Image 1 (cartoon, rainbow over the protein chains, first blue to last red):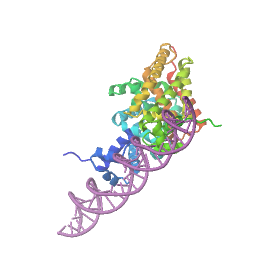
Image 2: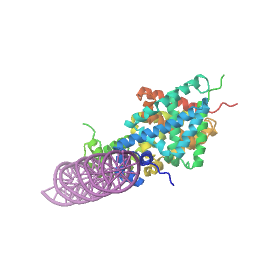
Image 3: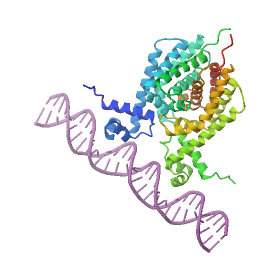
Image 4: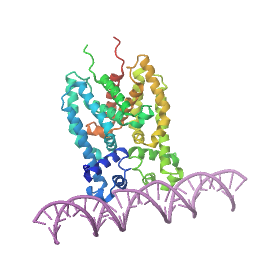
Length: 201
Length: 201
DNA sequence: CCGCTTCTCTACCAATTGGTAGAGAGTGCT
DNA sequence: AGCACTCTCTACCAATTGGTAGAGAAGCGG
């Protein structure tokens, strides 16, 4: 009755969660295997080495991320509304699959080889986003600034607010779903204030 | 002639750099010892276990961070100027001691026990910052919003922009010193836009 | 010179790591 | 039936891990 998920996919899913939460080095193949109810050698059958598994996980995560952005970007919203729609979806991602954004953080460690891998995947999407921002600034629908830099600020803010659970706890912000929604709204207000074009004088 | 740095301090310094860059799990005591030109057992003489060393590193990093903030906060600037001064100092930190902010990222992993440790140290500073923001909003020198949430956004943005070197590379932003200064200015513009009080109507 | 403390060393050790070799069970094709 | 292919297993292994035990050098007060 239960639809059986292929072993390979189950491994990828568990690895993504583990690497995104505890980190690559802190997750042993044995631990991963036990968690899956499978022997380590089964993992090594599907993926020739731990590194290969990590690469596959990064590829999968990149595909998921790109899909979210491209889907949302294809709706053709304008100005701040487009930004807001993306932020909403990143938050949804952070709530439903926190390990995905955690993996991004893991990968973007200085000197990480996997960073280049992820970068290759998301570069076209980044470019699209930058072009979008540039266009909207030219059209006067967003405050003018350096699009690359703005993108980096947006990325840092959104991913940070969505994932820095421990920092949030330290700040006395409960990480509940309700509170997260509240934070999202507050962040969107923050971004609106930063991005809204200055009133024409 | 050369002023000899005590072994304990040298260990702490190297460990901070390694843990902040490569992560705790990825740094073995042997690797650390080799890098110091010392045997692993020397490390274990000064710190009873790897975990104890990590705790000490976190304590030291927390003290350094708090000092930067408190020093800067004691100058009594107001409104956005105080925010800008802090941002400048965090960037200086990111350039001079990138491993320090890297360690913060490492520590704020979900479920990390060290997060509580760091949290205890910086909580008073966080509280001071929150009070400051609240006061400045009440005085009309900052746009009104939730101070905790604003603090989280600020933290995420600044630490993210200052540390996400790989993301910057992917975005085509060179991580040179010059470029970093440029990014800092652009970020400050972004924050000014977000935080400046709305013109009284 | 002696004994005490401080510090770094050599010599080990048990557990865990990623990885290899190959047996064997199940399925489907001929 | 027989064969090939797919998949997971048991059995190992060498290297690395964090950690213990204790020797020995160096300095110091008596």
